[in-house]
Image 1 (tube, rainbow, N blue to C red):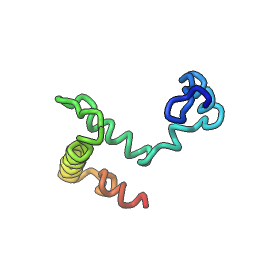
Image 2: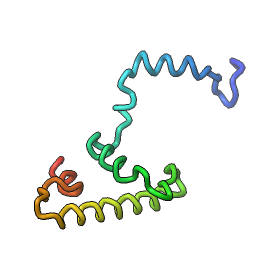
Image 3: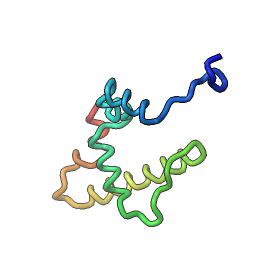
Length: 99
């Protein structure tokens, strides 16, 4: 017994943060699940939304995903309505061509 609880020993958050920075300086990039351009595009779409999108959790993930997908579709339709816009630059086309 090392004084832990349920086999775990408490670690001060500062110590964990220091180790994370030391061993994983690009940790945020390692955790990225979407390309940066996509995250930035979605950030611009949802910026200033009223009501704002809620923080994603296990109870609302599909509702939030559905809302974002609706925003993407609306943006793409609006983009394509303007003839001077390059169709390959809407969000769906960029996502398809990124792979």
